[in-house]
Length: 257
Image 1: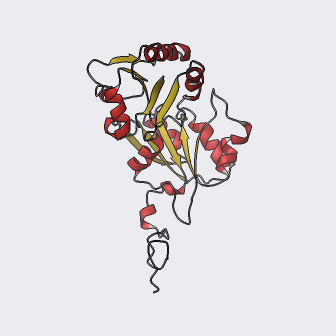
Image 2: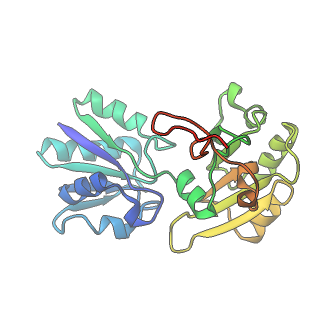
Image 3: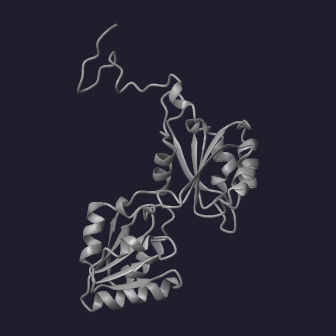
């Protein structure tokens, strides 16, 4: 017995993978997080499929439904927002399913971090500026491990992507400044990346909280911070070796000036 967990992507129904869409269209039963996943995507399931909204369901209730349907011999898929591997809460589902002898296949999806970078026209890893991206969240009601406090992570001075942190901007600013970041560090915020009501806000650490409040953004936002988010980055002379005509690699011999 098997169920399939599908990453639906960030919002735009066309950003599901080909494999994910194929499984969705073949499913007899589709469970989806209706507070986060586009209903337009779910409408692509076959007409006779059973569609189950899970926003109001707790873990055991949801897993019980999946197990019940798969034991009936039905093809069951569970559709998650973004990519299931990042803040997807899939581990606890898999643990219970495995105890009931139900295996799980995971189909990755486009994460909101990459959809947001695309919306901002940003490359998160700029040669000679930053080659590291940290995916994390500010500490709120859910604690983070002691060794992963935002202040300590920020000391790496790389690009930082903050999930689930739109209500914690004051704390974010304090932690970055305490880590030595300057007030004019660029920050890009994307509300509901790729959805029809997507909103983009370009700011700095100094003005982040005010700009978020002015734009009424307090949920479903990706916050990207660091100098890779500089709106004028394209006018600066940061270039990779990959396309440098003087650089030799396995597929091309460099040409000396």
